[in-house]
Length: 342
Image (cartoon, rainbow, N blue to C red; front, side, top):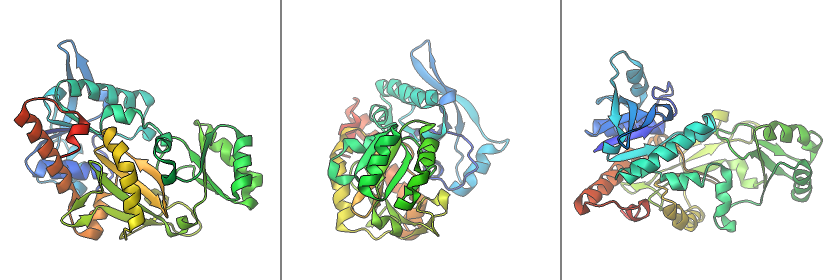
């Protein structure tokens, strides 16, 4: 199987990331694996998409892969994207220029036209460029939410709710996320202004269960990702007075304890995720609500593996192999919705 992965940076110094874990495992299982970013993609006069890409070497763990990709021995070459079996779109729109994310989606659409399996589906990703995507799911899965640039409407929402959380509509890693209590309201204007410099403000009801952190649950092809009887999930616990449980914000990792509520939330969102062609997704769950749906580059498979002692990357690769085999056996293209049943 030939796999291409679109990333933000081809030689990230952050070891162990999910994208590089998938890339290393794919190469070590004998798959021809290449990394590229949006700036290296090229549509050419012969109606083909090509990319200046970096080959993922075999016998390299995810922790050592970033160093291998930066070494003088790293193999770089122009490859024809249309000759790939699978193209994984794993770039994060919150940390790159808007043109780059648009390019990834558009080039991905062209590759699909030529029979490449592109995941997550670029047409689905185009609907989910920011946190507003969560509001397209049934209301019962998400907390009461206001999305606006109006300071007066946010103030009225805070007055009604008592305690709220405010954050940017587009962003990740817990940046510019604030909890606003009654005692904080005199300073709320400053918080709102800090967020709205970059666009819209999301104001949400505060969920008391947030003091216990959140749970990241991975879904694959719709339902929760399981491998060898284990669920791909982990908990993040906040530390000190910081309300954020993101690892970048100092949160601590723990083993997830899934319950019927979490699995029911996953089942509620499953049909739309399948319809939108979402192959690998991360749900961030607090109490009985979904706080975020991560669909561009959901991370943490390595954390789930740490606690469950199962390599979930293997399950992802097995699913991709089945999809490619199915396409080749029937000698025709299938939509990502059809392939999600595999």
